[in-house]
Every structure is written in C-alpha cells, then in structure tokens.
Amino acid sequence: MTKAVERFLEQIAHDQTNAWWKDGVRFECCKRGCCCVTHGDAGYVILPLQDRLRLAAFLGIAPSVLVSRYCARIDGRHYLMDAPGSQACALLGPNGCTAYQARPTQCRTWPFWLENMSEEAWARTAAFCPGIGRGRLWTASEIAAQLRLQLASDFQR
Ligand code: SF4
Ligand code: SF4
Image 1 (cartoon, protein in one colour):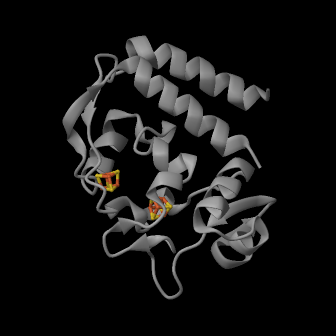
Image 2: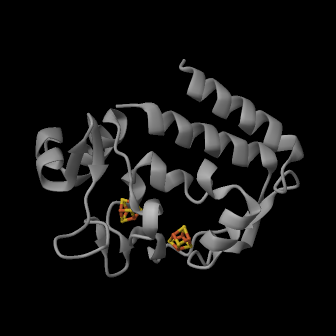
Image 3: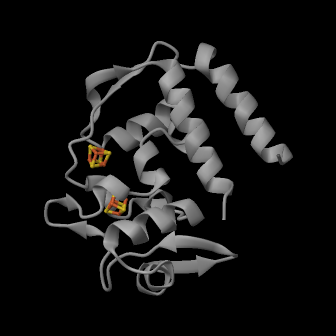
C-alpha cells in the first residue's frame, strides 16, 4: 500500500466519526444521468481492469474492443471516453446509463468520492445531482465503505 493510500484511509477513518457527514446523509439516485456529463474534474471515470471486464461482458464484446471503442489511455490508466463531439459519457443513452447494471466502480460510488466530501464540495455537487438530500439515509459507515471502494478503484490499473 502506498503512503498516499494509507493517508487517505486514515482520513476516511477519522472523518467517519468527526466530519460533517458523521450522522449520515440522504441520497437516492434519480438514474437520469445528470452526472454522466462533464462537470469539470468530476467528468473523468477511471476504468480499472475489473470494471473493463465487467463492462465488456455486459456489452457482449471483447475487452480489447471495449478499450478501442470506449477508452482513452493516459499514463497507463484507462478512462471512459465521452461520446464523439459531446461532453456526455459514451454509454449514456436517452434514459440514463445503458450499462447501469455493469457500470464502473467510480459510477457506483458517486457521489461518495473523497473530493466531494467537504461541506463546500458537497454543496457544489448537490447543485447538479438531484439525488443529494433525498431518499434514504446513508450511514457514516456505508459512506466510508463507498469512499474506500472508490479510492481502491482510483489506484488500480
Ligand atoms: S458508465 Fe454509465 S453511469 Fe457511468 S458515467 Fe457512463 S453513463 Fe454514467
Ligand atoms: S446526478 Fe446524482 S441523481 Fe443524477 S444520475 Fe447522477 S448520481 Fe444519480
């Protein structure tokens, strides 16, 4: 485990009992895909190997075809591309994600990403994510689990 990952894990453990979200937050996805369109840095979805394999199986194509059709490669990492001439994810359809059951870990864990978890960043995210503030209460331990999953996905290749 790298020092950076260790620090992030310590931060999550600390925040779980100390941060503004220690009593949980309400969130329920509307599944309309409003976050599947670029919103600054939040527009990048990393696709580590396990996500590429799951998506390729769901789409019925070889992993190599998935990579050539849907991925950009930067510094050894795979990123899901936007549709040509668009700022929307290539897998976004008119009724939301066309691969929802097999969506990447980064999408499964959104909006519980480390960079979203300050009060200010959460408010910025809530401005375009209508699921924030409604639906069921996610406990601090559930949120921490999502953050750990997203962190692991960030560091996998
Ligand atoms: S994979 Fe699906 S959930 Fe993830 S950004 Fe693309 S359309 Fe949205
Ligand atoms: S913006 Fe929020 S509510 Fe809308 S699809 Fe994304 S996670 Fe769900």
